[in-house]
Amino acid sequence: MTDYVNSKWEIQEKPFAGDVVNSYNDGPVDGGKPLGPFYELETSSPAAALAPNETITHIQYTFHIEGDKAKLDVIAQETLGVSLKTISQIFEK
Image (cartoon, rainbow, N blue to C red; front, side, top):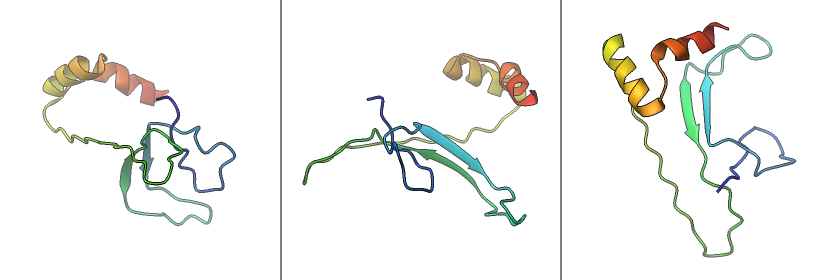
């Protein structure tokens, strides 16, 4: 599957042109007021135009891992194939 639900809060021109994973962090919106406080991780199931009584199953696993940086770096490299240093550098740009 390559089509995922577009989760923008608006009428969608392309409702099946979304992302598998979205993340949101609270922050000021127009007018300066925050939405939250919250942090959200959201996954979308593959988009499917289902017939009546037809179903699909979508399973999401979320893991929150804490620890010292060296051990977390090992986990990042083994699961993501990239170091924490590389990840951090992306956010510094």
